[in-house]
Length: 153
Image (spheres, rainbow, N blue to C red):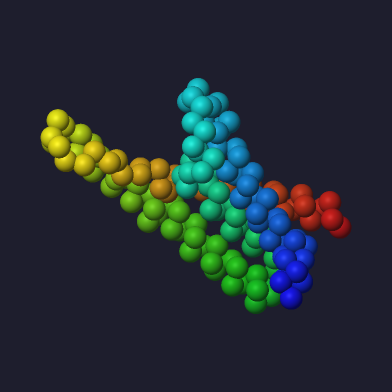
């Protein structure tokens, strides 16, 4: 039973396309940051923020693949599209604002409490995405499954 489930997952082209878009987005964060800022930050491979948005790439890639393999007029595609819109909105809106709040709080802590024995743990500032990062993730999320679909068809 478990082997059958793992086999089904391993040949699910829609899942593979989404995960490939996500992995490529995560992988590209380090070289893109190096090209823009001339610095190597290896932790970007595991970061929720940065260019391109891996959240947008994963969801757009999966949704695009669902459309390509099952049709763009199916209930499954409609549901995937709606969930993708929620994730993208969250990545660019709510989580972006949370990151900006963390940035301001860190600045406040540094200015007001420097030298005091209060916790110096910094809040994570790179949580959300700029519109440009989201567009980068969406673009990657469309290109990867179309490429995979073209190869497998």
